Image (cartoon, rainbow, N blue to C red):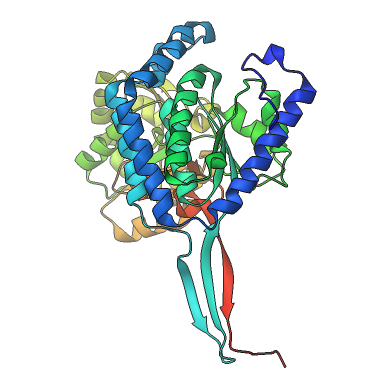
Length: 432
């Protein structure tokens, strides 16, 4: 095995980096082959053992985390970003519990998706199988290290983790425990590998390795995701942004609509399934917008709207064209009054990001038309956009939300990290 480059990118030369990345990818591919025939009980035992180690060695995890927290100011992290980086006993317990939740999910590999018997007597089974090797690039949140490893391995895949440099020591400590659990339970240790160098060139190296890596998943800012989508020579599961809408229909219960808009926008503002845009049918605008505007003002939300919006919400500022397409991830909401459901659908499909869009209405026909017409990964009917989440959808865990149409869409759980193949049983048939 070749020595890993140091975490100081200045100390690694391109030749060493190339060999290191090749070594990691080849070991992942070997581990993926072993995982493909690993029983579900072994994977579940690994997950439960890892959860136990996380609980038992929380002090070591926190000590590693302190090193990351002390370096956070050097990376220019905001207070909110530093808080997401922090590991507390409660958060470590949450990570451990999350591993146990994944262990409790049904085993996906080997599941018969469909089966038929042909006139020839052949039994044709469509069987769920792993994808192979996943390259996962993500932001500086230590819990994501454990979550991604858990869901990839549960789906029978080896995973190469490229976390942010800001959480490097925390992620290394978590992966060390995952490796210990693998040795204890007979899981291939190389099923989970953390990229040890912070050299950004390593990402490009891995993205060119389509012979060893089957799928890339970027999770972070739009710039990172676009870079991965542009450079990857293997399929990418991604979403670029989350410009999510709530449309308040003419037939909406306005108290319900207010609660849904407030929750969609304010429950957590810096996440991809938070509402960024509001559309209100003209028939409901005069009654609804003044009360909503007051509620948003109490919560520190700035409304940027069209002429009618500014007439009905005194504090609203005029919207520019780009406001309707912006993912604010903060206390700003674009708003527009529309004359019809069709106009609302047209607006969403023009300015939206295909992530999550909601309608509030008591009209079943309008709900069905909205669901059919809006081209998004999730359409919510009389519910907050904040529910577009793997845990909320009952997937147990997710590795991200995809706005693609192939191969996965919406929250990507265990099933979305699998493929399928046909296994055909015969008793001597030959084709005429």
